[in-house]
Length: 395
Image: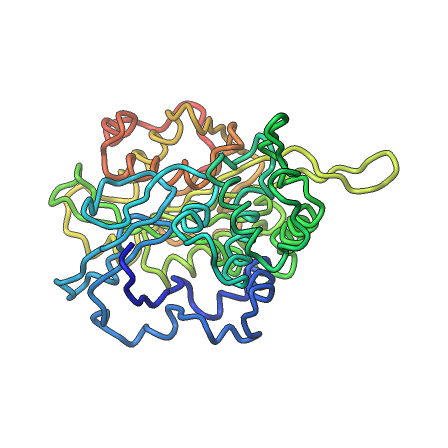
């Protein structure tokens, strides 16, 4: 690898760091100060336009955002490390690692030398555990994650509590899930998971901000091939718990106008909490829901493209989502997204239950890209169709 100095940038506002309690705990374990003054966020660089650097290394995504290329003609991506769908860009980047795994931190760990500082190893380990549910057997983790987690654990501040490889997985009885069963790893996972799922103190707008990804999509099927911005928020609670009585749509409009986006998908991932016979709460079945909002907004109004409206976008999006066999959406009629009438005129919306609870944002993001950009067969004729006969809740 090229040994060149780099400045890591976290693509969130500094105020948003406090929305992820599990990350704050990981920072604490890694020895960062309570103020996280060691970190560089979007807040510190917002005044720099154009962006003051030309060379970029992308981690956990593989397309450079418009904010970094605007009026910056020499912008160049020199490295990519990601676990999302490969968009086929930057073939000369070195390293160029884009492959499936549970956590992008696993790829980062694999690129590190055998011996790294304990604080860095701890940070990488916690990231892998957060992303893979503690290397849960049968879950998101693949062998890359297991190997990287073991490497990070050996170098981490927990190293003294990790059995040697010969004890973890002896040659005559190999156990790929051995690390996940180590007491210190189970306890660390439990703590991280509890902090991640405790969002009861967050308002609706905070929940949209805490785990947000933004994308720019050229609409190749529209006149002039304009581009629009779309966002996906992952929220670890059912829509009814935090978004009822107009809270979701009010927060969504505020966020969409602030970010200047046209399409917002709110992806709810949660477990039904059921009462046992003894009256104790137990974790129920994992479920997913999704709410979609399309706003006319400033961005769409400024685009001079005949026939491009919230209606045509909605028809294309609903058609593409409902035709997809992987996510298996169904109408969610118990959640009326605009019952409180908080959405602006000409807005479009729909709410779904997601049949495949394993399909996360890593599945939804490339599907959204295909639908909006027009490369999906399900979306190719969407603008010519009418509403489905059995629609989800919609305005």
